[in-house]
Image (cartoon, rainbow, N blue to C red; front, side, top):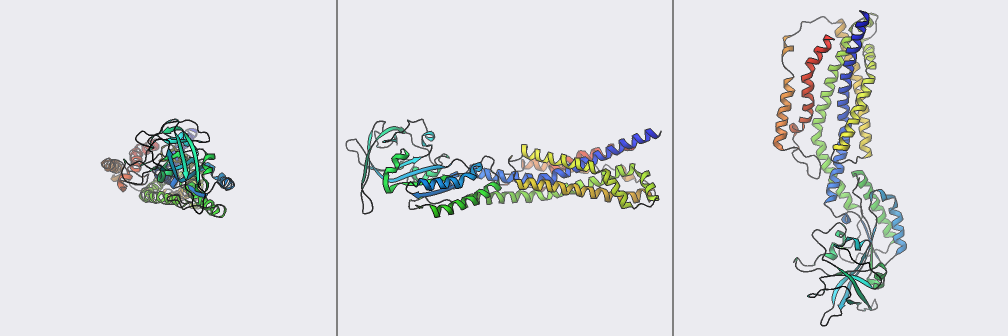
Length: 486
């Protein structure tokens, strides 16, 4: 029978360590999942706010007087390291206060803006012809009631003054474009809202016409030309940490631009934009994350305490199975703490496996099912450290529980079993799970991601944890009975 006894011992001991590994995995998932989930919430809150914001308002904009091609090249070189989290830079040239006269009998000159913007032809409401020098794209509603048609000839002029010479040029309309939508504008045009919107509050009042022309043509507008270099953040995969670093880099480039560039901010609504608007979005995302962290803290504490209690209970199973061995070692004079260390050492592989499995499950759950897939590197580091600390805590707890059980189970007197063991105590977590689910259902779910956190109720948030504890409690009694029978 010695072979059968050894086989039963290995089987029951293995079952105990499987339970230990499962409980350690649950605690590791909690420790590692908390920073990962909060990082995912922060990224989701950031991207949610950026989705409702004009990226030109939270990007980098440097208005400068004149063309200054060398300065633009310098700015491009400064922005090159930010390419992973920024969109391609956009150059806009504006010539305001241009007088436009159409070759129509009785037509009066009107004011217009002469504008060139990188990618302008691809972002109109319909395809337009490619521009050549001496041609412009005009709004089809200009010069009512007949409007403007391709082939029309326009006279662009600027009167002279004490500081400038008069300027005049004939251009032909290569094509027309329909009225661009405003309030809100599309993402491409939102940075030019001050030019595209009407100065009055009447929607029927058309805005000042904008004539789109070539980059070469705009250079002939003499002192009226303004060049704007713009760099927007790329929201794809942008985390809160990335946005904070990007805002600091925007500040550095803006400070460098003041030294390198002849800044021109005289035109209304065309001022320098540095990293402060993007930093404000980062602060809002951080505030939302702080609210979620506060609502998660009680649940995380309950989960960790439950894992510690379950781990202590699971440790008694392999300790009881080694009762004869522990008695013999105690009789030889070994300390109970040394015996606890021996038991913990045999549990090292189960603890390591549970830690890795729990951490991997937490990462996969947050990455694939969390509010946002992009995770901050600091959060991943915190998750690894948390899982490592949890594994060390589990190892120490197993040793302490095993030492205590070695003292009581080997040298303690036998006690009569209480009738209280027949009480259905496992129904308590089941009832709690049902009650918390009813509360969660009444709220219609809880929202913990985005700019506004809703229904952050403590008991409703406890349902996922109780949903795990309840079936474990129900399975505990038959599991212990089977282990004793083995």
